[in-house]
Length: 150
Image (tube, rainbow, N blue to C red; front, side, top):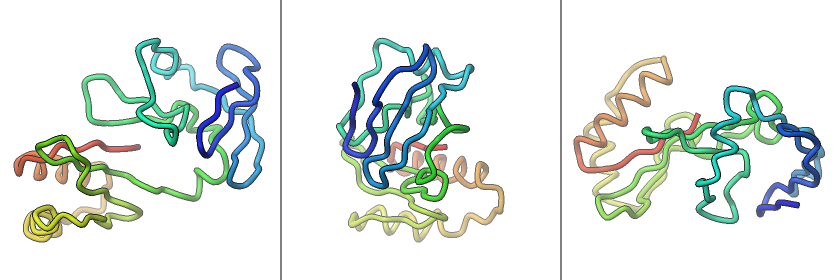
C-alpha cells in the first residue's frame, strides 16, 4: 500500500487505523491516527520530502515543529529511540546540523559549532520545551532556521 524505507503501511483498516510493519524489526502494529491530528494527517497538500519520511509525521502549520500523528500507538522502536529532536538549517536553506538524543549537537559546520559553544551550551534548564524554545530563539538570532520534533 504505502511504504517508506523503514515502515510499511500494509493495509488501511478504517479512516484512521492502519496495519503496519516496521521493516527494521519486523514488528507489526496497528497505527491509529489520533483524533486531533486527523486534519493534519489527511491534508491533501502534504508531500513527504523523502522516502525516509515516516508516513505519520506531519508539519504543524505556521510553526517549525513536527508532530507524530500516531504517538500513542507508535511502534516499539519509536518509543525507545529519538534520532533527532531538532534540525538546524543555514541561511541558504541547507541542513547544517541536528540535535540528537539529550541535547547533543551533530554538525560538521564550524560556524554552527562556534554558535553552539558560545550561545547554546550555556542555556540551563531541566524543562525540555523551555530549552528547545531558548535554543530556537538563539539560533534564529544568529541566522539559522530551526525545526523542532516532538
